[in-house]
Amino acid sequence: MKKITLLVLAVWLFNILSLSAQTIPPTGGGAASVNPPASWVGATASTSNKTLYQGSATKPWKNGSIPAVPGQANATFLSLYSNNSVITETSTTITGLTAGWTYEFSYYVMTGSAQTPAGLTDFAYAAEIAVDNGPYFKQYDLSSANNVNFWIPGTQIFTALGSTAKLKFRTLGQTAKGSISNLSVTPGSFKVVCGINPQVALSKVTLYNKCFQPYVNLNDAFGGSVPQGWSLVWYNNNTHSGFIPIVDPTKVTSPGDYYAFFYNGSGCYNTDLSTAKVTVSVYPPLPGNGQVILNATSIVNECPVTATVDLTTAFTSPLPQGAVVKWFDNPTHSGAPVADPTHASVLVSQYYAFFYDTGNNCYNTNNSTAIVKVTKRPCLPVPLPIFANSEKVNDELSPAIAMYPNPASDEIQVTAADFNAISQIQMFDLKGLTVYQSKGKPTKTINVQHLIPGMYIVKVVQKNGSSSSYKVMVVK
Image 1 (cartoon, rainbow, N blue to C red):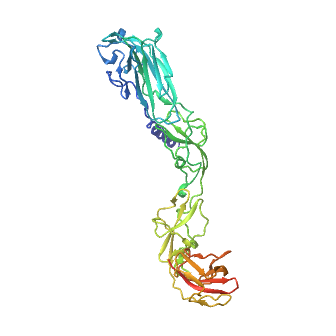
Image 2 (cartoon, one colour; image 1 turned 90 degrees about the vertical axis):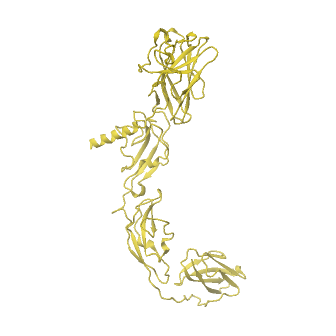
């Protein structure tokens, strides 16, 4: 078990490290030339090495050479020339940033005197570094004897305003012969300042096992994008304490609180106190093979109604947490589910049951074996009901009352010469069961969309106690 854990950790670290990317163009690595290093721009910027300005044999440094860049014995670096008529500048673009995050990069600056067609240049008296469109807020004094031909280390810390930032470097000289300042930015000199960056933004603060699986995927709580060079990791504490994070956050089986961090693979976290918390509940898995367990596998229509069956009678067990039962006419939940399972068509020979996860829009299975077979039973004619006041059911409407359309599929309109004289309107099926009854003051519209197609009786009761009943047909 220990070997497996260490293997998983090794793979995890490798995947994170492989995401790392240099986000600031270095000044070395290419050949010395009159051109600036790759991804740097500037009219008087060029690339030099420790023996030759711009790599030209006719432009050696004073005294033959200058010190090599610390840690880069044969490296090239950026050189920038200026004179008393113009202050020159070179720049590059820092990429792969995340707005709101704090970054630090390190570099070296120095001045040197080189042979040019106009003679030896002077030493520059200052160099300046700036990030983005702010002022040149960091200046390096190059004029003192201690700083001539000496690489001065520097650092710059800034908070990103967006995904990119502009890095600018300029040299200051006051003579016609001009002066040169050098800049060295090496790979690995750019990094995030650990522990003080924004929290991981979560889209959910609670999770339960999705689609009735026996585990929870913590990453379902994160709906954003991971910053370049980082990975999303989870701990069961808010200070990323412990040897490793949750090894597989996609299959968590223990309920509790979990905290999200961004990690760069080199010991750096976005924060040392995470408030990005998700609370996990792990509900019991579905019994058996994960199918809906029905208490009936066949169902017969009830007479005298012959058009539908009630599928809900085939499942009466408690529902799993967050679930509803949906019925389809196929085993792969293709198409739309049965709109009204209590009135499913008998023209379909069998229906398939599924548990539907309402919070995650998914089903317990893509191949249901929970089948209910439907048998259509022929029914004998049923006589019309006899009501308490024994009035006759008329085939033709009273001249004073009209009902239309008949047959009807959506609504029945009731009109009367004196509608205010009506105290109540009732509607019965052929069993004598009430399917509609007006409440309070009767309305002129009866909604029949929910009714099973067939014959119904509408009874109109007057305020004087008299009543009359009429046959109406509901169709679909």
